[in-house]
Each structure stands twice: as C-alpha cells, then as structure tokens.
Image 1 (cartoon, rainbow, N blue to C red):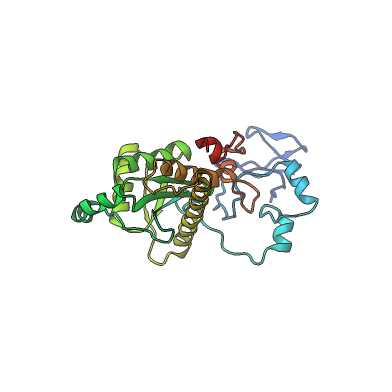
Image 2 (image 1 turned 90 degrees about the vertical axis):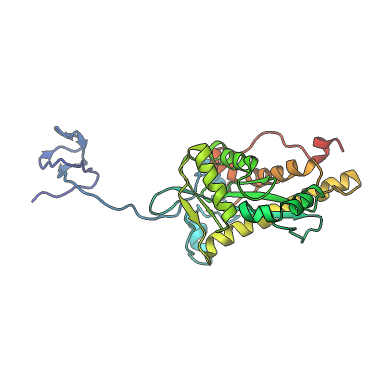
Length: 307
C-alpha cells in the first residue's frame, strides 16, 4: 500500500498513487511532492480554534523586542512561556459558528457631576411618557447620552454624543457609518444589553444600511461581554474627563455640559484611545484595523481651540 509523503498535498476528488521523482509533479494532478510515492484522496477537517494576534509585528520589531523581552508581548512565544500568569480563555473575536465579527455597544451618560449619570432617556412608549422632562434636562445640560462602540477583533473604539437613546436618525446614521465606513463590516454581530431602545436602534441600522445584523443581545450574566463594554465605558469616560479638565485649565473656567465643544471632545476621546493606546501586542487599535500606525499630526486642545 502506498504511503502519503511529507510535503505532498491532497486534492479533493482525485486519487493518485504513482512513483515520482523528488520535486516533480505527478500528472495530471500537477501537485508537487517531496519524493517517492504520492497518494491523493478526499479529506476534510475542522479548523482548530487558536488565538489571533491581529496585525503581525515586522521582523525589525521582533528583533528589537527579542533584545530585552520588555515589555510583555502576547505575540512573543517566549514572553508567553515565561511571563504569562496562566493560559486564560481568550475572548471570541468572531462568532465561533458563523465567523461573523463582533461589536459591542452601550450608552454612558455624562452629567455636571462626574459621578452623576443623569436621567436615562428611553425610546418608544417609555420615551413618550417623560419626553418633556427629558428634553428639558438635555436643554439644561443636565445629561449627555454617549453611544460607545467597541470592535472586539481590533479593539477599536468610537464614542458619539447622541440626542437620546434609541433610533433617533442621527444615532442610526452615526452607528451605521461607524460599522460600515470605519470598521468596514457588511455583516456583524452587535452585542448589547436587552433594552428595547437598543434593539430598535439595531433594527433601524439593519434596515437603512442593508447590512446583516444577526440578533446578539448579551445574555443576562454574560460576564465577558458585559465586562468588556463596561471597561470600555470607564476608559472613554476617564479620557473625556481628562480632556475636559485640561481644556478648563487652559480656559480658566468651567466648560458646561451643553457646550458645543463637548460633542467634539467625546468623539476625539474615543478616537485618541483607538489611535494611541497600545495593547499587550504592542499595537494600537488603529494599526490592527488599518494595518499601519496613525501618523497624522495631532494637536493639543490649546492649538485646536486657540487657548
């Protein structure tokens, strides 16, 4: 019986068992073999589940890192062998069954006090009940709803001030553009909590942008999804507070929550995290998504606002 040789390949639907010389091809399959006999048969297999490290480091980056192995890099097998505390379950970057990318969305609320999230503006019937009070709160600058998006694969983050929770036209447009234009997804799982307002927002995005958005609400007690987006909210909120404190120092006065500067500052905070925060792989989210680092000149708030 002929044996399968290392270096040979299998072609579905074709069987060949003839002697060939090393490096030659067996005709008519034209598949190169290492040496000896080849045997091609139909074979299928399930791809193994392995961690993904996104963009691969260049050889120069690898050589520079290998000089010290500082800091820890999760793409370095020696760092993982010597420094990793354990081998935790890595998060699902894509749905394991459908192979669809996963993004997570949630709201955070900025108020006059750092710890005050302000009133929650609901959608549909709940929105109608208290619409006058909620609109008054928004006009008075008592609260500012922010829609936060996190792409699980690239760790890319966006933050957008929106008029209210739910399917407001501006919110639909911002979320649809972030998914299709920034992330480049035409089919994606959008993980969220189970609020009706968020479900209606996702349904409207699916309708207006003709993208496949399978339902993927976070299950109650889904610690991975809930923990990831909660940490992202905290990171975004901290960046916004820092940027706001810096601007107020430059201006010498408080910036009210109804200032026209705040929506820009919120978007800038999310973009700054995606462009400049370096993960354990040594890459920014921008590089993971675009394949290159963000190189455009960045200006401080002083230069942007002339303060």
